[in-house]
Image (cartoon, rainbow, N blue to C red; front, side, top):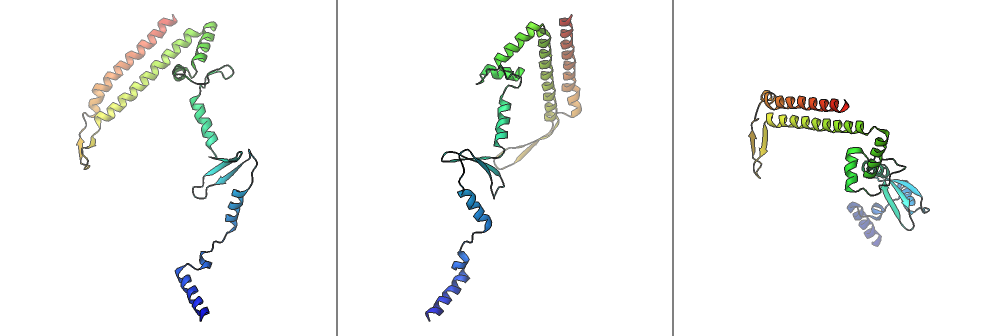
Length: 216
């Protein structure tokens, strides 16, 4: 009778999904491999790769003295790229002494791609070679043309803004209000664009005339 009761209990557990044979965890080859990797003893300074089974991200693990460092496989490349973008590409690497950039260094980087000290040294070399005046004229021209190109982009943005219909959300309920365009593309070309074209022509003529006068 007792054995029958045990069999009935076993059947009921199987129906409920709670039988020991149903809940027993079976360690397969891949699980055993993962456990072996995690429990593996590594020498200090050694590195190896692990793949996240959920995201598929590859991580590089480095064994330290008593702990491990985990980082993505491409993190060193990204860090190098960030350092390159924050650096001074035109500085002479053998003589540059800029370790921590100051505000004046940042300003010179945006203009010359060099820190302040390297800029001073570079311009000093140009003056000794007698080529500083030509260099200065070219920088002035480059800056002027860059400003003009930015102004042209602003005019294009104005054209889109003034010749396109706009739609705005006027309240928290999501009601929308449409505004018609302030002028047609033809009207914009006849007024704003035409005035800018006249300004652009005068600007370039004055720039070229100034260079001619300085070269004579």
